[in-house]
Length: 364
Image (cartoon, rainbow, N blue to C red; front, top):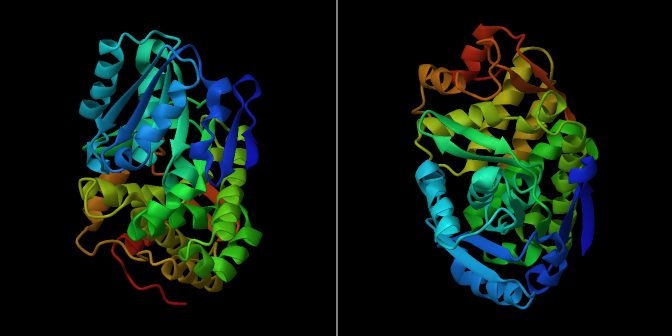
């Protein structure tokens, strides 16, 4: 087991990474507040892991260990589903010293964290991510939210977990498409701040796709280390942390226009990162060679490199206009000046953005 830390002074917390950690849940005992626990999972993950998790928690001397199984999918990440968590807490009379445990992917983690941020004005929670995307990204950093039909993650709060437990063994049961979608966020870290990691990914994509345990452990640890470093410097996204959103303004627009169906989050982010890299070239910030490297690596992971042809420029712009990074009515984008170098800007030629949104071919 490797342990990393998100350094946030009195709210610092560990990220435990290793194989078989779901069989060693005594490690979270010190992170449970009070003697009540609610484990929140979904209908896909619960049959695989929930019973074992509950049985182990019951050996920790807690007063009550309750569980709730929600429907699976991004389209259920909304206030209606959120209320089911509140109902479960209230019906079982959980007090303000309770601890919520998110057992699942990014949707479960985001909703459980947001419920913890709101219930009785804030209670503790623990992340046990079971997807690659959640292990490398959404479980770390305290961003919690639900979606709205008009915008992705527009209703939420910053609420840090007490700890994160990433058991790499859970990735063996992950469907191939979801596994590949998680690689989008892994690639993101190389693109925004870690050129050496990007080069490692170029050389090791096949072992990752084969789910080699050593390659996975390294990729997850490198991703979490990169994210923890950024979050430690800018917890509530006042500046630097926005670089973690490379491709997300475009990707969230894809998800919103599609009604959070059809494409997985990581697939939308993959296409969004290529769009961001393409615009960076048009603006003269990124070399065509680095653009080709980024696009080739994303493609080698089996991820889309162009957005759905059915989405028009006007649909893109309408969805992007309610992105969380919009300030003063203007769109802020995360772009690239090189592999491992991201920057945030609202100073760009809108006509060049139109070319990217219209899918015009980029000429070297």
